[in-house]
Length: 448
Image (cartoon, rainbow, N blue to C red; front, side):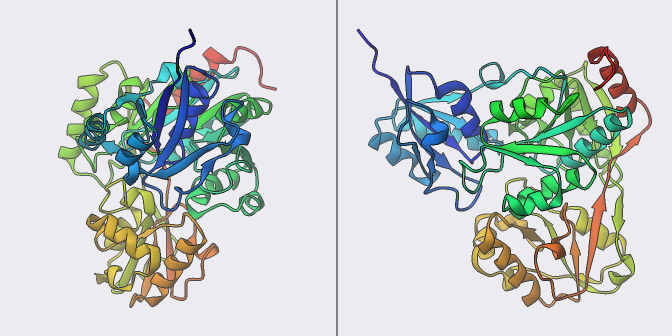
């Protein structure tokens, strides 16, 4: 007698949730995914995971609801299982959601690497971190540049950020800055893609990561997975590199799934050592050894470059930092704040009285952000609100600590300086020798 499919709700944030569906549930008739929920990212609920991406079991697609509705959704759909599928959350928060699910009568599940990782036909290096904001992007750029100097064709694949038309975003390829405009990228997407394309390498992203990988393999000698948040990779890595942040010592053991990425690591980079307290560095080093004693540990700094440091001295400055790092990443400061202090800012603008629209909601949702402006730009309205907030402030100078130059995408009507940062390794071992050993092992033939 045929068994009734188990009804599943996938709890997500427009990324890992879609990947777990695609790899685990899409073609398995033992299950029916009845809904997705959305958190962390504004305005991604109220959509549908489209039929074009859902497969034959889902001719009408799958609705996406706000996570706040989860207890009611479990009852409405008589759900049997809820699958937690987003990242950079404390263990306490994960178990709060588990308790909510159990109280409503459903099972609580976490999908692991064996079920969700896809294998590549090319050597694959994965970059992850124990929290968002550790410096994954600068490490990815550093690694790609090192591999390209070896004469290799390197293609990056970025953790998903599909906040728009999901069908159109199934497979996205970015090779030029113009491609960012073609795909209507948000600030968050541009922050991740632009630093790659301006350096001359291709980066893919999207929704269907099996299809993405197969396209990327056609033009690559090596694939680099550029992870998001503190998630573990969508692909099975031949070399796993995880970044730890001594500004948040102890977080490497207390956030999901950051500890997973740390335990999986072949190489761990302790980043930002130039601006972290010695006791924080030591705590991170001890925690790495406690749970992954065989990992190679690379010490690194993130030295800053400021476009016009003289504009900062003695001024009342507004610091704008990467949005997700401040919000669910829980960072109190970033590169912009460090630079403003280093170059003698007289005082800091409190952006909260000037915040408008959705930025006001961001401060209400994350009150711990304090006197830094998060560059939230998940859509046109947020970008307009960011522009209006900056221009309404009483800042004499705006210090931009985001990965891209905001003045290129919004109209900042005040003097502004840009802060950039790159990875600088300290001593040995270093990534150069690690990568040389990797390519020697995995590429026995000459690159195409």
